[in-house]
Length: 106
Image (cartoon, rainbow, N blue to C red):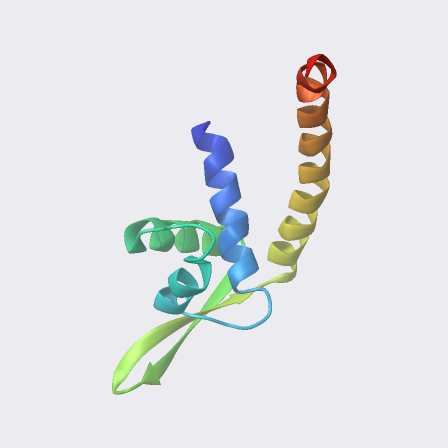
């Protein structure tokens, strides 16, 4: 898979994981696990990139005597999810066109 395409997909997956509630690294990985495997190092790179692009914000809170970073999706992050949904419809249309010949010949 193209590296840039995969990077974009992973970004949207992380945004979707925190869309409904603020979350932290371990929980994000756990919530995504049924759908996609992701290492902690990959996740934290993505979270930093999304923070720098304004798609999420970070707050630190104490939990069990330790500091934990919680991630919150911004309007820009929600907009990115919506953009992805629209882009995906176009990609699926292209996919159907590409596979059309195979379906007709089967």
